[in-house]
Image (tube, rainbow, N blue to C red; front, side, top):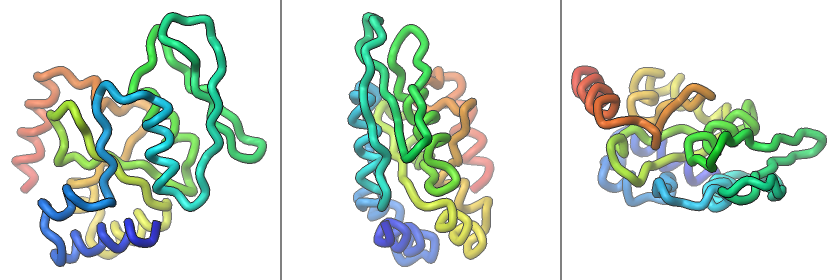
Length: 168
């Protein structure tokens, strides 16, 4: 995980360009059709202390639900009528905080494959302290339970792209 932090720090210090960041190990690329268990495993691979995952039969057509567990803490991800990448990512992120935080690599906005990265909460705070909250969040958007990433419609994507362009 330390290497991921160093790669992002290099990017913000202008020692790495955006194209190199796209190709770096700091970014996890998730396709909109990705299996939700795989999404959780990708995030786990970036963490020093991975979360235990299990599946539980729910009798729904979309298949088993994912259960996250760490110590005494447990959460069955609350899917509605179907599994959904946004729901998986949001609830995984909420579950691992404040120890870790998943953020959306917003340069991938508008694609059907989106980028994400995981750092410790302290590492995100260090980057924001050193390089400024606005610049860090311009590239890596914090995720909360109201966030939409894969579930944005084209009008929302266009609006967000225009807002990003105006912030440059």
